Length: 275
Image (cartoon, rainbow, N blue to C red; front, side):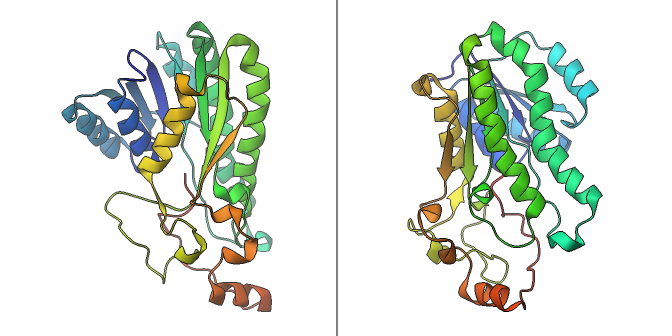
């Protein structure tokens, strides 16, 4: 087991990608500490890990609240890996109609939480050196779609702070990397619904969307000793989507509407945006 005896904190680990990461790390022997506001799903994830022979615990925690973060991390005796997974797409709003409070909320969840978790986790990680931080960015840091200004900006900032922390923390034995998933389906979703997905499956050279396990395997690699000489890097998990031109990303009908000014936003999708 690659993570036997190591302790990992996963933010937003109650469901979705975070749950997939928690399950995968537990398979590799890690003691998994899940923090989330979703108590019901968080406890169920802990029970599922236990049924599979792993070890995990759940703490209800607001990762935008520095007092809560400092208090909780101060109660932990060991930390080897931090996974900053929590994220929120926010409202689908054109930039000229976006409320400042909505912008700030996306930034708080996607970026400020990462800063606060790193700020208070680094002293613990220094004690476990070599240690690792893996941040969740998104393909939206590279390829844009309309009405996601706050989300795309926040995920671009995740790439920048990942590189900054990688340089800053390398001398104390802490590696810092990120992953950027594309559309990632949750458990039980086998295929996209064309009416609710702005991204055509045709734009993925590998012919499918990613799964939580795809993302979890990438995070596991970067967190483990197998990536001991890798820091400050982002790993795209997009099935080859960003290897193509931007024109290949949006469905033809939506791209035409965008260019003509008749673009209509589709409903928010729980499967969109990676993390």
